[in-house]
Length: 358
Image (cartoon, rainbow, N blue to C red):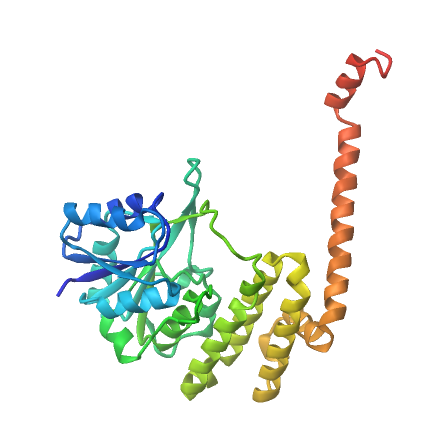
């Protein structure tokens, strides 16, 4: 048995994959296995994997037809033989001591889950930024038990910065959602592991480098606009199957669903925003009715007001929002134009052209 199994989901990342695999084979913890799951790539990703297999026998390769991220992750986790399992997205990379530090921490405290901070980076520049996972420093480097504070649901949702005890994952049948072609399937995995872990820890060290310049995004596809809502339906189903989890964490669930759906709303192209709000309004009205949920429990008047407005009349919300956006853009444009009119650069240019007196 390896100490750590690292699952690498792969789909058309030929350009970035070598950097990821280099960071894995250079881990100071040598007793690891690297499970590459190729989700039907059509570029040279599979050739990259085979090339690295010749360098390092710890690399395993699973190939399959394209079925999406959730299916890819589940196959990787099922194949893992390690005591703990980690995730390395194939366009990212990790520090050499990642597995060693996190594994030693997990063993020392008998953790189901251990998570760290991370860096964001842009591959075409030298820009790197440290991102803390916890918004409250008091939650770092302490064992968090099963009676955990719901505040942890407000922390960052990175699933790829940690280790998960394999027995814990399998005992609780924790799975990624396998909706074909869906996105955001790490949300459900994150919620399950956070809510079910009996012992977990956040460490205030960063090991993981999260890429920000991979252009492969399909958020403007009409077929993708409901993926976040679908994912939170998946989480809600999990909660209903675990009544204790439902009772303890319904409020943070609704709050998280609101924030992530509204983040998606911001990213969805304008012609699809109304369609998105229609689904969100229906889902939220159903949740409130089924659970006799009082929005005041969210303890945030702004969130309460936003949800109430969308639930009452999502069409009105949409047109008010579009009007506000138009006025904001108009105001910003007028400020930029005024600044340009008063700029020394413009005055110099007009003098050169003889349009104003010297």
